[in-house]
Image 1 (cartoon, rainbow, N blue to C red):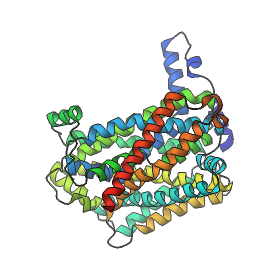
Image 2 (cartoon, rainbow, N blue to C red):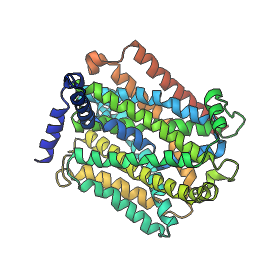
Image 3 (tube, one colour):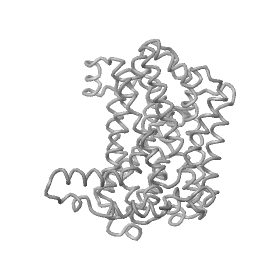
Image 4 (cartoon, one colour):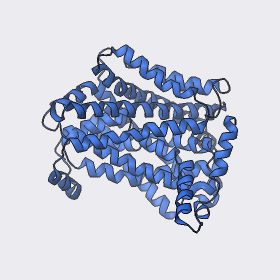
Length: 438
């Protein structure tokens, strides 16, 4: 069975409504039907959400925990699941209805100028973010005694190797397996023995440390990591490549909702991991990820540090795949190139050239001497928080357009929620710029 036949087979399997699949009289058959339906359709939402807890995000969350302890930021990040689901559900719906990638739709409906703006800003932001992935992946390897150049090269080759596997479904399953390993952050959070009373107080009272000079910066960084622009481009293209259609929306929404919940739980766990360093490490924001791991080993023990280092590598590995694919899909869709993961390298050379080339640029950039590593990681999240605003405005307008979406356009409630989110993000971005400038 060739790649496209396998993709068509998977699409045929998920074509039935899960309620119809589960009308069997025995509970074992119903359970088996639900499990099969979810197994076949899960992927784009989970990968977009879990991949967003990338190496830069892990460092940013850990630095936030180390700076503020068990604080307001933990309930803040948990509440962001509602926001991320709202945005990514629009993305899934847009892709399933139009069968066109987000970048192409912006180009068609808002003109070449805005289309090019979205493409260029995404590529720049993705490159900056990919740098943080290689920073994270190399951190643990350098602690094992590997030279930075060797650690960087091995990380690059591992991510590139994904391209040699055949078929969208195979690549997606491999990426999901990598994403499942994020569970190590929950284990490390437990091993740090967080103070239950302090954690409960943070969850119940939402006491924002407003007097801290950098609080707004970290708020934007937290929101920026949860709502990165590449997620919209990635998931919109992935649902098309996978073959998700309107009749699949019910399970696609479950996939997206599950991903949004897992994402914030892992993010909160990473903040708890970082909180063990609160008042133990000075100038944590200027330290490298390797020094962050060493500090964790000193305070929480070597085993916790090893697990955290593994999780950091794993997070960077998964995000390198998804972020590079968002760049490849965006350029290929806009320029009309072959762009399916069901295509082999020879069938879509320019698509895979963007994938590999963006990885090579990022891997080479982190070899620049005296690069402020942790600052670069936080900066990438802040940039994502600022640049998500125009992307979100385009997404809302497209999904509210009856000519584009037909009966699946946003209702009045959906418009109200989505525009509220967009305006809140714009307000946060303006406040951050004001703080930086004045």
